[in-house]
Image (cartoon, rainbow, N blue to C red; front, side, top):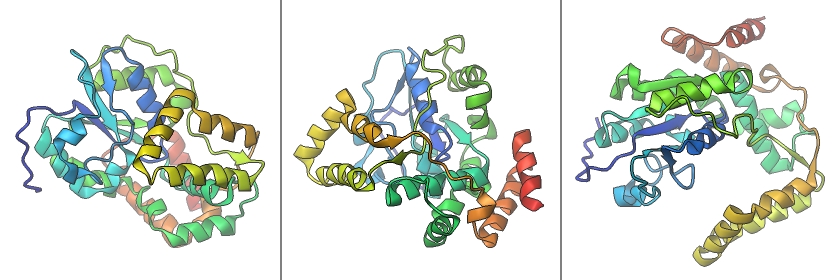
Length: 299
């Protein structure tokens, strides 16, 4: 158990811990839309995994402290940091943990495609070999799809009822029920229906000019290295979304290659995800569509 102690009485009411590429940005936007929920600014603070040494005062400054509001944040990489679980439990033993899960094989493929977009400027012409090369280069694609492994430290640190498990599939199938369940879980009025219920966020895109795409991304990356420039860039992005609008001008309409996880993930990685899935299935009822996907992967 991490022996960290906190002298301050402040703590968030809930934290979203993952999983990456599982509609956590959508979940954040729905929670932020609620009049009695205050979400951190920006979304992914990564306090408990990457910035813990900055202290609780730094963490608290990302919340305005609106009177009477529940406070929460979502950082999907928390599920990839076992130490974060004990740090959270030390800060607030009553913390509620929100978890968005996606079919683990599909999550790995989506993660690969997202990174392929950054490397190649799109995914329309990316081959299975290209994606397999990425998968072999970094263990994160498989590791972050091993949900049982990722959730075990949190199940050890918190009672099971403090983990709210929600599924990516419901974002498309029944978003209103999903949002009501999320609101109820964190302790907010579940009768509220947000206006942005059906918006789509962070879809993988293709761009007409890979060169321009990389230039725009490169400018923002370079700017982020210098504090004064970074603050100016953050203001521009927050108020005009200039970068996104510019990239949208370069975007082509369609771009996802007709590839499956079985096409791109090495056999040992598929087996690793499958074994973790079977462990998780003993403690959480999975969506029917995931069960069908397992049958297909075993065929």
